Image (tube, rainbow, N blue to C red; front, side, top):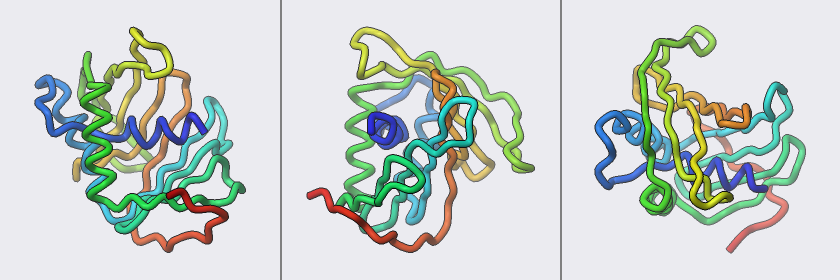
Length: 167
């Protein structure tokens, strides 16, 4: 479950001033929270195994730990997710950003930025990552320091059938 929580909080951004070279990364990460339909799938390093999945809809967020695990509904609408992302980013600010460099994500042109963020599991240390941003300013994927990746899809997704609800 650590990976799913990581995906939620590290996919946020701040309304606080970011370093100039981190502003594009912060803006794109925040844009994820403003969208009405976002599917985030986290894959293990060097594998196609889904190790976590998040579905963000306008009225709630749904998570599961693996591709066949039951969904859990979390009552966070878009405004609450954005506020949580902003709070998390203030606590874990972006730094050491570089880029962009040109990239390709399945035929879609992207700009790739590298960044650092404090590692909440190891106080005093940072974790590196890369974020791929499309021409609309939306995150298409994140590559994490351990080699795992989060792939973002945008669209109209139906609410999944849940096995549990978090209140």
